[in-house]
Amino acid sequence: MLGFVSLFMDVSSELIHGLLPVFMVTSLGASAIVVGLVEGIAEATALIVKVFSGALSDYLGKRKFLAVLGYGLGALSKPLFALALTVNWVLAARFMDRIGKGIRGAPRDALVADLTPPEIRGAAYGLRQSLDTVGAFLGPLLGVGLMLYWAGDFRIVFWYAVIPAAIAVALLVFGVQEPAGATERKRAAPIQWKTLAEMGGAYWFVVAAGGVFTLARFSEAFLILRAQQQGLPDSYAPLVLVVMSIVYALTAYPLGKLADSMSHMILLSAGLVVLIIADLVLAQAQGLGAVALGVALWGLHMGMTQGLLATMVAATAPAHLRGTAFGFFNLASGMAMLVASVLAGLLWDRLGPGVTFYAGAVFAAIALLMLAQRSRRLPAF
Image 1 (tube, rainbow, N blue to C red):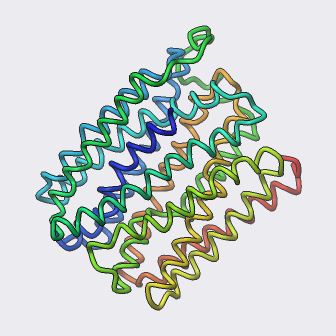
Image 2: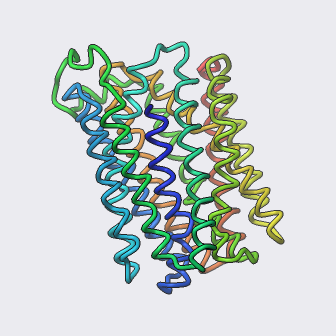
């Protein structure tokens, strides 16, 4: 049920986000660095807010209330995109939407761990991520159809995003129950130094690795802009996210299941190699075929690593601090996302798209070296 909640909210969000970079550039006159700044602030906000919502969910012993609050706030933000007259309006709408995502993310991820036994947790995170990603490609497909039907009217299309967002909130309210024993957790101050010390070195390594991963993988808005630069018409811009999300959806569950029976470090390293190849393909792309290949490889990388990183956080953090653990993991990723998206926009405007993707490949290589050094000391991790 949590997967279907994610599916419908992603239909709503990606219907908008698949068109938003083009809308900002063509209708509102934004530059690539402005797009990067808006996306960086928005995504960083979501990830940073998770640290507080995750810790609060541990303190209260309640996950669902915060999840409902977050999904509800996301749903309320959708009309603002249709009403936006300036980039500042878009930034405000994205900020509100991502605050909602930040509030719901860590409690929801911790709730998945609360509901599943450790031996199938990788499969559980992979399944939820797969359903989430189904929404991530249905949303852009719906966006393409609506753009063609309404002759490229961005604002009318954005209004349709309200419907699946409302369905997602209703499913969560009426279809998800707090697991038995959730109220029996030991309460303490939500965030304190003693709590952070309990996490352990393995957990903090996962946090550091997640931050470097995020530096290597800036906002998908730049994938859309790369395709547009290579001649993709505005109405078909969401197809970039469709290609990425189909690959992501098809691979997240089987690779999450694979993570339950093989070395996490090997799978993460393979995911980084795929990301490096994707960046190189996109940097040198000549035509939409090459862009599509790079985007598909990007989606494969996501399928190999995102559910796995969540599994590693759950495995290395104490059970009563899982919400806090997911929160701090996302705090590090949020700071990295802000830096990565602003840097990507700056490189795009000053030095061109190729350099932007080459820089991503360099950060991915740095992350790969980190994993290699860690594997020598803890090969079984």
